[in-house]
Image (cartoon, rainbow, N blue to C red; front, side, top):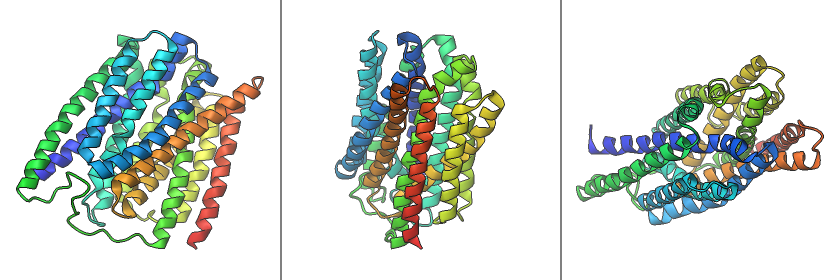
Length: 395
């Protein structure tokens, strides 16, 4: 394995480990808040909305800092802040302490994901970029699904403290890997090997400039992706309520309600190797419609069989929408750190809006337990209208 390949492998290792750590912590935080502090759907929605708002602002800055100060600088800040937040999460036994610690973890994470997206894409030619983005998507999505799948089992075995201890250990390990990675990249630079250790280093092959049509698709993807995360984060925050509805333990939730995560992995793998969907408006439209329908069915499903089938459509839909956003972000120009920050910032907007609408619906319509699902579905329909409006400009 060459030095360049070792660095690329290390980058994907960071993607893999960070995905596992963040999912184990954030996805099961809502279960902890429900069990330990009595949080219902409304308060979990409000917590998710607050974390999403923080993420949307911090991710934009994280991408800019990575672009201006360097990728390794951004990664070291991110992992250090995440470690501090996770360590603080372990200590307080009151709700506000857990929430403040979660805010710190969220801010740290915003310096990491835009940087990792840029690291695996920067320096790639137009021909190789789909491979880099595809590898990145499959790696993070697979470990995301595995973490959600086994998280409930880990909690039932070790207690809720595991969602703080294990991610903290993984984050500290990643911080050490970043220092090693920087040393390797610096050594390669001394040997005049062209590796993108910092964003100021010119890529080995100039990337083609984005066409007007490509910029239209980038805007459509940046619109669609936050709406996909409106659905995802609403679903994650509502999962303790769904578990109570069907009398599922945390372990059972991990087994039953993670199907969409594994379907998303399959969608990423298929879209990686089949590229005819690139810059095809119809595929984005179909994915958005499937997203709206499957989201509503999951939250309103009368039985587990319907819940399972709906997750298949949901996983495929969010797979194509997310892949579109990241691919078009990396394909439209060379400011990949900044574009990665925007890509993550719009995810934060979705993470905020969906749960916020759900919380407000339950606040003002407390007599209608399904009001949150209906209101968020209506919000998704508004996003679909916006997608069609932008799509008209590409014709």
